[in-house]
Length: 275
Image (cartoon, rainbow, N blue to C red; front, top):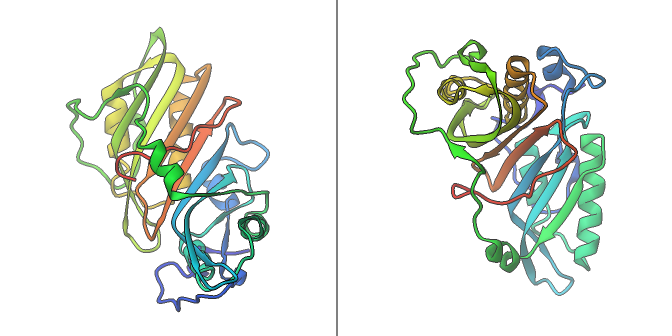
């Protein structure tokens, strides 16, 4: 239907400052799911992609501008992701657009984003004081970044690096700030932090770190990187439950935070120190 090559990503774009919903560009998830051996009917996880916009602005009827932070929750099983540059261009098109109330703005955002994703998108407009009051969050559990690992191949993820001790069943959270991959279109680096929470055979922390570092030159979108991590860990451990949650550094005023889990719960959307 839509391939990323036809999106505005990596191309020169005119920045339109008045409401233009046609700027939004959907990319079907089905192709990447198929690469991972999945389909919409066989997803082994549930979850959400939290997008945070730090450049949300519009005009009141008086002409006075408002600035806020937008939070968007896109279901992990929605038919489409929203291409990130098109998302930014769309949000910029609100800059010189008049909305009588915040509720009117939210209604428009919900309508346009849900139509593009193919499933209802949650929208929250947050005032700066409220976000500032929350402060910064930290990932749960043990940070594995100081472990010694040796790795020289960064071209693609290496699930064979993962190892576990099947004789020990543990429940733990491990996290790393060393996740990096590249945009599959522009080649620009995507920096992120990731947490793996599970109950099952004890995952060897150094093996997890080496595996995460092997993404360093891998080209894929944030969502697919997290889904690949989820599937590789799940295949090894066959855990009672598993959650993989990544929070990426923003680009163009937007950060993307994919969450995949076997549990019936969603995380808090809290900023990390690099966000």
